Length: 615
Image 1 (spheres, rainbow, N blue to C red):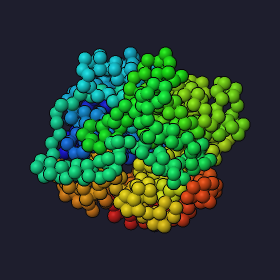
Image 2: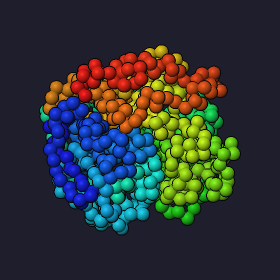
Image 3: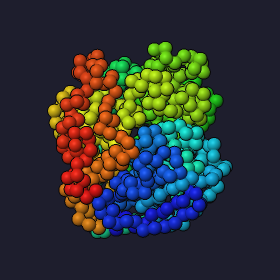
Image 4: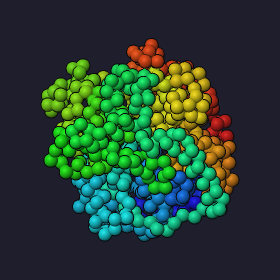
């Protein structure tokens, strides 16, 4: 129960769609979504495969709770070998697509091979077919979704698609569903584009069954009450979204600014949640229109925004005068503080472009920040940028590059390489703020020490969502730890990593963990799924998933040397704020982390650990 017990295998080479049973033995060991799909990928794909080769596979996967009435149970993930990183990629998305896929009768869809011409998958209640996507190739995500719904005459169809960025091979292209929810990181949209797969369109009405309905409803009700009563999930996130963090992180001196040259941004207040809600002088309207929620969500952290119609970015551009997905914290940081830009409407416009063309705003903004430093140090010239004056703080440069990168044109094609490849090309690799090829999110690890270890060891490259120690180090959840010390951070990071692997595999949103612990989650999984799902069992599942991902990366060619941070964070101390004079103490945390993981001093899971976890 909870699982549908069915997989759809799509062979793009042959143009076939076939059902097959879910491997329930694996489901009992890896739960679902992130964990279970990773198991399938590991078993079926050579870790050394070129991410853009037809031999790479791409898996869309739901969790056992996806599509149920559990709060936030609308998640799905895309699992593949990432185009940006060459590492294991698992990119999680909300919205309504995951629920639709589960209700159409499938736990997972496995795409293999490469279509001879652009196609899209149409799936309706167990019936799947590949259709010609010629009419949509070269179109944005927005036009593709509208066009598919119009073609099939059903506005309730849910669509996940790539924009021009994914078609053109932008390394950090993402897959966008519901217009502005995205499987955003690691270049999963680039992999989708390499397969000539434009979109997946689904209509599902079959329903999802659980093992013990009464027990499940009781556990779900208890969980929803915990979320409602919590200050973060019941008040802060609904009112201000993740953008509530902008001023908070800036105040503690951990807001990476101008490609991590600084840890505080003077313009933070101009691009914060408070600024989004404040009426503009030009028209008396606010950037923020309302909040929004994904399927089954009782939190509602999403933002819906509109740009000032007199702003240079939207003049004579009617598609950007409409309300759409607004800035969340990570995007606002990457497009703003990372580039030194504090023009809220310019950031909102660039974010719209990322949604429309299917780009990860974190990697895009961080790469623009790196390019700005290359420009200001004379490595890149105005001639090379096509006339763009690529200075820190230039809103015009940011918005011009958003449009160019989204279409893979001009200097935008260079930005589309990602910061690692860009800085290597111009022989300044140290200016790329990344781990394993993936750009940092919005927390400077000199001011939040645990995040440095989390970035360095994240299996998909630098990532905040794999081990969000900010919860503990800044917000005091589940308990307060000192962000400026390395003491105890190895254990904290491991605990967050294992627990998050469970949440990602269950089909629910990681934001629930601001209020929930596994003590709240386990009863819901246990009532929904076959088997005895205790907290202890779930923690073992999380640890097993983490080690499986690690094994894939090691086989792909990564080593312990890749568990590292840029020299800037290890050698150049923070200049201001509480962390003034500090660098990240990765050298102190990493050996302890390896020991707690049961890995060798080189970062390889020991035979004892492999045996214990039945890998």
